[in-house]
Image (tube, rainbow, N blue to C red; front, side):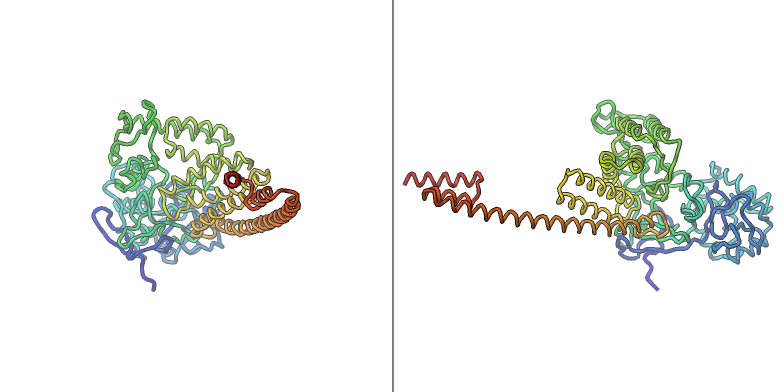
Length: 569
């Protein structure tokens, strides 16, 4: 049996967490884990108990054994609705109609049933952090009371333990992973918070948080979770996963963690007002027009802001209103349509606006750039949208050049906030190399660059494509990123063939030019020798020197110096 790459530790700061049991190199596999259960979001649609595909309101059937579990069809090939769960549901005082009508109770109920038939799993599950006391009497507590607790008590079990229900809901909220539904289940993810699923992995749930994680996660269609090291992890170092969207600013990340995970992040990035030198949250000072406005104390929830040049202070409320206005303008520009785009930092799926007018986007970028730092997270969001929009525009040289500039700018930031293996970087690199190849071919076609320059540009694109593939190889084959990886490998093969062909043509052309040059040189030499016979001895020497050394300035100076010496003698 292979040695475990991690060990479970505990301390006052992180609670129970996993750390590297030995030196782990970037790309090494740390953990492979099957989910103990997969369920819908609290507001998500009904899903099949067995395979977790979405089921239509009138298109499902019940398990023929327990007559309660919702199944997508008689030929369902899933395996999550086990025999033990089927027997427990059969004995429970619940009907299939109740489960279909109140989908919010399904995930917690299936966990509670473990108490009867899978006690070891239930005990491990109950050891996970629920933050019960910090959640008590909050809006999420009251929401679960109405949507889950009351229904379980009045509709199913009169003696249901309310604390148990709230703890189970808390564990699911805090520890489950947002994962994609099976690829054949939906065509487009427009609202990840509703359409995505929640997967519960007992070992992976022990990963601690850091806003600069050291792991890369992927989940296949069978919900098998694989965790690879995104960077080198020294022995004893905690294995971190970023619970947040890596492109969020400090205020938004800390708020998400405070409200959803119930702790204050004190990582290096959260303590740094520059966010690792990216200024992802910084604004431009309208007073001195030179300095940047940054958080005075990033570790304080409602810290004021200050210009680093003129020291003018700004209230947190004013900065928040400014950011909200910028966010509103971006949203309003593309609220009519949305499309699925894969440039998501953490949750793997992101909805980007389908902007029909790139000129309006460019104008908005110029407007926001007056107030926000070029790396501000709102600017980056808009630039991602623009890169996607340019992909859908005619691939002329102007559009390609603009897309290349956007991708390069984004990559400079991505490399700092998500080092090592990165899905976000991989997809941006893929788009970058594609545009570089198209632009280089068009420039060569229009005779703007030579054959040699074309080869240089294509070799650069090849290097970028190889780097993209190195990231994408860790993705499941059937996932959108995995399919891009397969396409990228084919394109890499074609690109190498193209480069080799062009290099051969350049080499042949070079040899032909060399032969032609030598032939002309020989003919010129023969003609000059014939002319030398008609010259004086002094002229013969000068002509021979010219043939041997050329007609450069240095050659002319040498001949002039030689002639002066002869005259002096």
